[in-house]
Image (cartoon, rainbow, N blue to C red):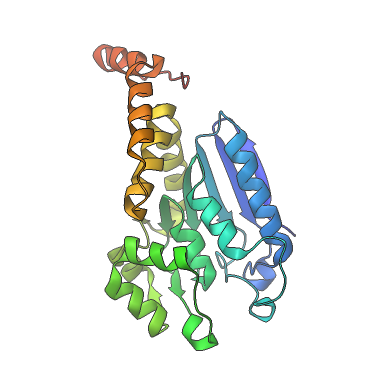
Length: 247
């Protein structure tokens, strides 16, 4: 089955639903994913977009036998759209993550994993040269030395090393994986929308070397004169939860 999108309040969730093939992606899945990301972007109330999967594995990337064939939506187009998504993104990695799926996870703002997860990037073994922004994500998030180990040696690394190198932002035991995911989701969805989404966008651009200073200044000024800032400071002074409206 193609990936499914559900939206509940401020949280959108995309679920990969091909557990029988380790959630391997095909061209139909790519088209669905790009559409789901677009829907989440346009849903103004959505502040968090989660990517999760059914079964033992998170995702085994794009179908190797279809690499090089015509696609309505390119794999890197989907991954780049996920990185550029307006909401804060979380990859919920409940198992192994392989090939291009590692970049799909890296495109997310947060990556929550479990101790039995592992990862590898077999591009060099396949004779496949990876695309530009994927290489850039690996280097900017994991560092050059780790990127070379994973790309050039096709090493498999376990969850502990995935956390150490920065691939996982959170590593928790399997029995608290879902509750931790909910806690992280609720924390993020309770933040002030203008500041939250604005800073996510500009932090990514700083990492990518594409910061637009004029747009940054516009977003800073927008936050300074927002209802959210007045509510946030009032709530802080009153020691109560803030009720943000994104205005």
